[in-house]
Image (cartoon, rainbow over the protein chains, first blue to last red):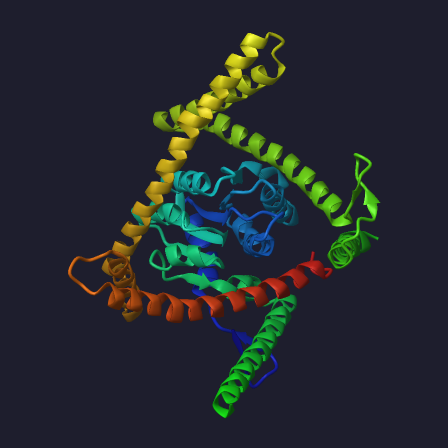
Length: 229
Length: 223
């Protein structure tokens, strides 16, 4: 994920899916449009909780830029527990800049609780509203291809990050700006380089190395046992 | 004071609840009584509380959908979008009316009729539309794969296309050809390459989930 340079500063491998979000927000503001961010069907009660929270981190890091450019994103959620969280993130960003009167809670939309209906509803928003970029970050299934298809029909730039394998299979052919698996959890570090994010990324790397070493050792031991017996 | 409320109280609530839930799984004997007066594992009661909060969130979500579509019905520039939103609001209100009538109507005949109509909405409109959308997902996936080969001519795009084609072809029983050979190729692709990639991804996701969860639990300084 990242390399330690000569200085002690952590260098993070660039992930275009997150790096381009800010520039896409600027482009949306220039063109009088907006970004659509689909957070997916994961909620706060279930196996996709952390994935959804990681997706909300992206919204949080993007919110200030969007407020400054006066181009708030349209955020669609497929689980109602994410709705108040996403609305709160956007409202806080407006509060930080003293523009709370401009805050519109309808920028965050609960579309439908079923995955396919959510994808169809989000696709309809991409097709019919002034969307200039389409980002899909969070918990999805293969139905995400309905959203990417809507984006492709309008020739929109598309960015995606997902952890589920069936969603990755659907997203890989749709966009080359795709954060795969664990890269989704590096969004905060990638977009802000704040210490709390980079430290957790380092912890993740150390754990991964330890796990890889353990697997390699176990495999070698198993091989040796077979060869020697 | 504000920092304590913002940083440490949420952390303490999350840490205490998480500890109770973990201990609940380690010592599964029921220790507390639920609202019916029956002994229940404590983690079940906490899960019930979470479901109640989730139900309120659903009500908020429904309010959000209704509000967005009512605004669209009056403010959209294009007339077809207005009609779409009006149709949505009308359908939602009709279904709500049917369910309310089915549950609260004092006349039994009206109640039965409304219940049958509401069930009919589910059986004859929502279910078939859901099935059609699921079929549409397959079409969208196929279209995306074709677009990939047209727009992104990299080596990985070609490998992706080849794997998809070989896997699909080896799934089909082809007359006159050795089925064992084809199922062998498919088995090798899915259970060796596919499984290895899948396990690698899942290990990364598990580590990312664990570290991200810890980061969320830990009190934040930048608010």
